[in-house]
Image (cartoon, rainbow, N blue to C red; front, top):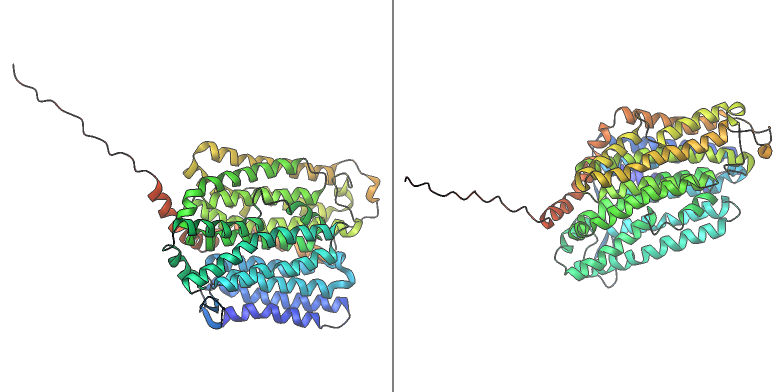
Length: 506
């Protein structure tokens, strides 16, 4: 019952918040109380695998397959659920300045998005996964359209078109599989796909990959990201970058690797190349940005590009690193976007030239921002460092020193653009654009960020809970692709014994 309760709780919380009284402060308190209770409930997933849920729902016309409300959890699902459930209350806590009297709409949308993300992470029925995966778009579109910046409508439309067009092919693929295999169960589909022809598996593979690559995003499907992140308020983009993007990576691990192992092995070189291009290219583009939100958007592209490259090495170290990095990046990027959002709520500005000398006027903001930047840069002692180290180690084991060294440039470049941002905003020449009236962080804003950074350092000192559970689950999901990759690699020619010639006595 735990899994069903965990799925239903945020739905009920969203309904209660939607019908709360007119007082914005009371709506905020209710949202915080309910979201923290859901986070506490989700923590139980870390202490064992609860009983799976499998409830028949309805039979899809034309397929003969019945959709089941099928839920289960393993280490990977459990840790990503932690990321979703704990980012949600901190996003609500940090949204007051930007949302003001529209807290009801914000909190309801955030809780609805939380329910759908949890559903996607726990689903073991392909149709249920798709419903939740695509349903996440609706509350995010509300958050962008209602609370976004001047170009929010264009950003929302771009976000919608990219993600929906990518997922249309996934919908067709799921229906075709259900009609052919007469099931939506993920495990049975993984077994049944192996019986299909090469051509059938090929188009199905690309349909699945396209839907997840858009959401990550992966080059060249990242055109929506920078403008969407820039126009979305800090508290909402903290969830978009910190949690929703990880569901795209999760789809690659949970569905693409075990269902299409031979195709993954055949095209691994392409995804490693795209991932390395994203991790280096994203960091280079981040350096030349003139506003902080676009800079961190391209930073996210860079970090998740490294995760995708590591996944398609099929190396155990890289898969463990991917699990750690998804959680670590979610914490650090959410903290950065929350802090940028606090400044934006005060001044309606977030350009690199809009501020200067903030360290004197806003010391609490300066300290938290520097700590968040250090975590994002992979300072030793943070979870980001462990994740990046394991990913680069996996790349080295699979692709050799040159590819790992090129990907490793992103670590240096991350330090460069974050130092540029810190220097300009906090230690550069004071700019009159924002005036001297800007105030430091309030206690509630500090509480919205400090726990995320504390978690990043705790997991940096003790990442074993993630590597031994989430990393092991990711490695198990990639096992069919590992075997397919090993089978496709030509075996080395056995050494021929040296030819000997008998020596005859004279």
